[in-house]
Image 1 (spheres, helix red, strand yellow):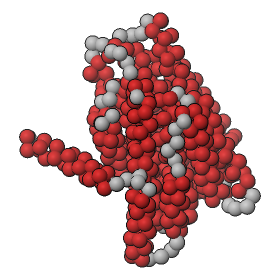
Image 2 (image 1 turned 180 degrees about the horizontal axis):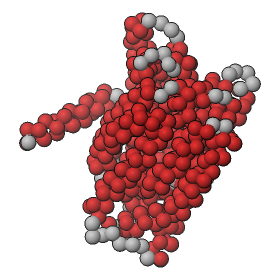
Image 3 (image 1 turned 90 degrees about the horizontal axis):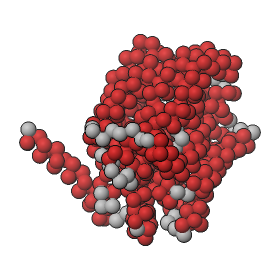
Image 4 (image 1 turned 180 degrees about the vertical axis):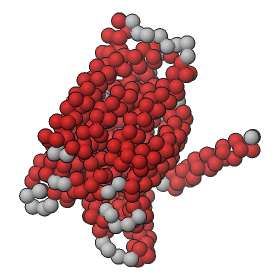
Length: 496
């Protein structure tokens, strides 16, 4: 468990670098495309993503859990094959269905012929995308985090080199040509990383092994599968529902706010890679230590996510102006604070799910909590749209849904495990961060905003210390980790 903080930190650094590179590529693409063209791209990605999630089956997290506790290396490949066979039983029908129904979806449902080719290319990419998650589970389950994190950075550079030329030449369709090529390259690269160390141990499972592993993996994977479907529909709900009633320009405005806000998920997603194998092992061996270590770790992550989300919202007008290079998406600014708040709150749900509910196999509790996440959002939207415009309706409905989801996640963990770690201090700091975030929409000179940030963020940081979520040692340890990384780099260079 002593390596938990180290690998979480390195994971956040690697995914942070990958995120920045991804944002660079994305904002270059946004500059190339018109608002309408970007709206078509996001609508096609949203439709494809909503259907593509049904291939998930919860196999990635469940396989990671099983691989991390595998008795020998020969079992690892057997787990991989079992998971891959099951996944493609679902992926193939989805990909073929989307390919042949793309014209019907584009013209009869969305009344936009430009969607036809993008949907067909997306369906083809699904065939390669399907295996990537299982390959990731092999790498993270065997705790080869270093290789996984290096891959994330390198593939992000490859992503830019592929997408931008395709988009520049072919516009909307070019985005999806790039998407297909990128997924082919990613699948090949992950296969090499996953199986090279297992050379000579790639043994196919017998029928008996397959049945046994299928039962072990599916004891939790179905719940994870349903949760993933519910989350993806929550995430894609705004784009999908706006696309039914509004122009692609309106979809593009919300999609831009969503694109900016969901980057906050980088923190919880990066630690999830480490947390599932680490906390699964701890839950089985020492439940008392599991609770203590999780609470300490959660409070640190909570503080970092709140600070990052608040910073991203407060300085959004300045950051977006730099990234976009103009006022092209200024209409999205009023949506940034609520959408970021929704993803900040969901980040806590994500961490608790991966670190507590999956290791404890709280299947029904997970599903129930995510149902409230989605249903709360949908009902809130249809209520709010009677009083305010569609764009703010979608944004605020996501906030309401995420609050309901978090409430029920905390309720079930407390009821089923007798484990309570979320208190009034957490609530107060969320409200404080949200209040600062709402200043995103206030038009004031940048220097004035910068000056006001000193007391506002100073009070926020003071709240972290006063609540004992972080202390001076945490700051020292963080700088220590940075120093260790730079020392290793300097040693490596001198060795050369």
